[in-house]
Amino acid sequence: MAVMVLIGAQWGDEGKGKATDLYGGRVQWVVRYQGGNNAGHTVVLPDGQSFALHLIPSGILTPGCKNVIGNGVVIDPGVLLKELAGLEERNVDTSGLMISADAHLIMPYHVAIDKVTERYLGSAKIGTTGRGIGPAYQDKVARMGVRVQDLLDPSILRQKIEAALDVKNQMLVKIYNRNALDPARITDEVLAQAEGFKHRIADTRLALNQAADRGEHILLEGSQGTLLDVDHGTYPFVTSSNPTAGGASSGSGLGPTRFDAVMGILKAYTTRVGSGPFPTELEDEWGEYLRKTGGEIGVTTGRLRRCGWFDAVIARYASRVNGITDYFLTKLDVLSSLESVPICVAYDVDGVRHDEMPMTQSDLHHAEPIYEEMPGWFEDITACRAFEDLPMNAQNYVRRLEELSGARISSIGVGPGREQTIVLHDILA
Image (cartoon, rainbow, N blue to C red):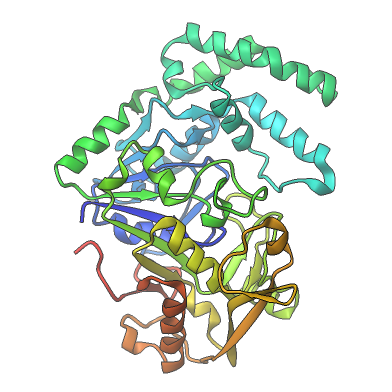
């Protein structure tokens, strides 16, 4: 196997950092292909050190691994510099990080517009992180974005920022009653920040395709999850990019025929952050139990995650739209000590059973979960390293999820540590 895509199969926060870290030690390249600093990965090393990564790929923690921030990512220069400095302060070698010349930049006016727009929407807000990701993607699609390569030509950069603020300042002042932003100040600020990372700018499309030609292992990691995809997610309560497998190709420059495996990351229950439909959400003591036991707080935002039981309808949908070949099931240990564990196998929408994702937004908002109960287990499974070590009821739960989800479960997380993983099928072999 040469190229593997790693996909969040729910609403994000599935534990992709753990999965990336597990395989990252055996690949030569790790690529972040979409999103911005509106998502995070937590990686716990064997020595107990914990790292929260927001923009930089998880492979940065593996010595000798090359890391790429791909063209599909939007980058806040200040956040990038802060994250690099934090890693280097902890003696992490960042010399292998490359940044696509075609990635877009999040500018101060994107952050300002993001925050003021959410406040203006009030109860109708989307629930964004307020970090400027959506407005940056809007400018990209409108062909008025600022790209990383523009940092290498101050004249072009200045022209682009001035043109953007001709429009943005009208919006900030006349609609939102905010102060206008100074294009000269912003240009100087961004150019100063660029001094800290412009030596990393590269033609990453060429580098990745040459690496694939050489047969080197490449892992492409997405942020967020399938149900937050702007095309395939629970629109409009989605992110502004494509976390699904199609986004891995467009956001990296590697053609889809390069992909040898697509691994979906599934949590053994379901969580989401922000507004939007969530059929299995638990707003009772069980939801609080999952939140507290699973430590369900957003890595980047610090927001409490909404929690619910496993949703097999979502898993089947993720298998279909991503072409998932394998699943990594995380946080199985959180379910220990439950007498029984419900699984949502279908939805009831106004008296009609839906075994697959409803077609319309209205139907999904009205979906009620249809549950199947599985016997629980009380044993501590955090020391299990083989499938046979798991209690029989935990084994049965995993096999039922595999049957319902439509793809084999290749790995199981039984704790936060790198070593707390059961590998059933080695997809890098």
